[in-house]
Amino acid sequence: MPHARGSPNMDDFDELLSSLTPREDNEAIASYQNTTAVACPSCEEPFDDMVVCKQEFTSLNLDFEMDLCTTINDGNVVLFTHK
Image (spheres, helix red, strand yellow):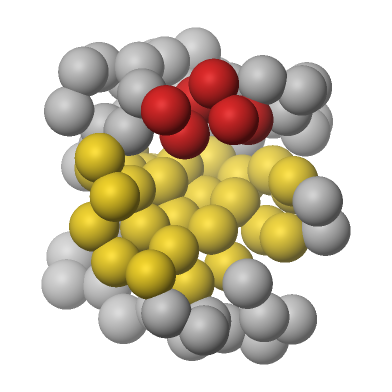
């Protein structure tokens, strides 16, 4: 089971994005699906989805319990979901 760690180095954020499939993009969030088993930059385990929170306060409605890893990129909170 993944465990949260300190913020990883997000210098390769654009490279990470290029490996993911965009799913949703609105004023509050951008979400991407990991269809190629890319490793989470926080825990190094494959993650399911990445969510970039674009606003200071953002609410997420989760359909089920899951593990989350977090980091910050360009001042935005980035969540990595592990189902």
